[in-house]
Image 1 (cartoon, rainbow, N blue to C red):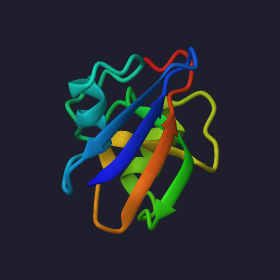
Image 2: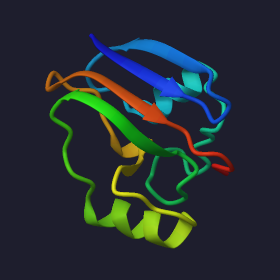
Image 3: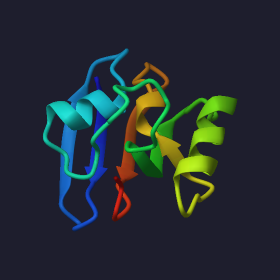
Length: 106
């Protein structure tokens, strides 16, 4: 199991123990995390699941070309740690991960 911590724009945090193969977007939706809507259903088309990776204990794959393009087109301010959480899958390579949901993430 991987510990996933979501920090919402208001500072409230939610910890979730996640099984391998789950995408962070679905975990956020299943656990009522505010600020993640996943309007496109996780197909990497809308950026309503934009997060900032604050901390990771393990190895996270780099963002793919399509993810980078969507971030550039859909997000007003992109940071080095910006990711779409529909594109982050829990794996054995990740012991824990903390992501922050930026304000106005819709």
